[in-house]
Image (cartoon, rainbow, N blue to C red; front, side, top):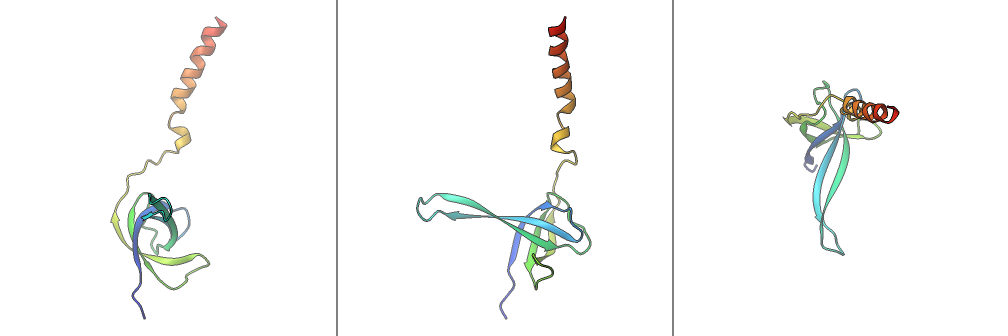
Length: 109
């Protein structure tokens, strides 16, 4: 039996129960243009205790198929990620509403 592959990547989704999606970036040279390109692979990994959070850097290990798409298991959380809990749509809403209200008031006056 060969050794199991171990990859390191960032958790990009933790919405499923006991499953996280890990984005693993690798750099390769384009065969025609010889430019270095970043290729991102997304792997579904088993997280037994739901410990991983969005933005965490984790190590995953190849394992037997656990479901239709899940063939990896989280073995270590390398670093905790700092990701805002606020949805991107709500970050600038109050500023946007005040800037929209002011010009309308000036036009009507």
